[in-house]
Length: 114
Image: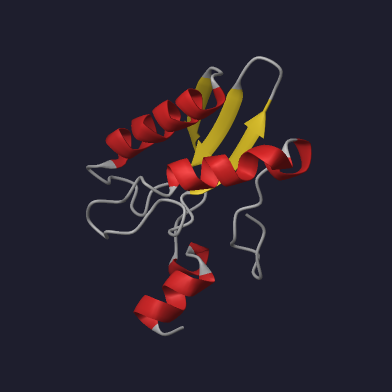
């Protein structure tokens, strides 16, 4: 998930298990923020995925701290990763504040023109 700006997520799993990136990206791209209508991947909400020996640790943020769909999106993320990798997955809420610079470059250009 590395990118052009400092706000683009860099997943630990990219360097430890790069063979899993495509499957994770494909699965997580199906989870959308219901209010915005874009995937959690394109919005940059999955900030990190790290694979340990016995579990996956995921750091996620929401577009707003009190997003009513937040718990459901986080649970869907946990479920999809756990199903894809067949390993226990934990989701933790990150301390970053979401901003439009965290979106994929393509999403920013296509929908916001910057």
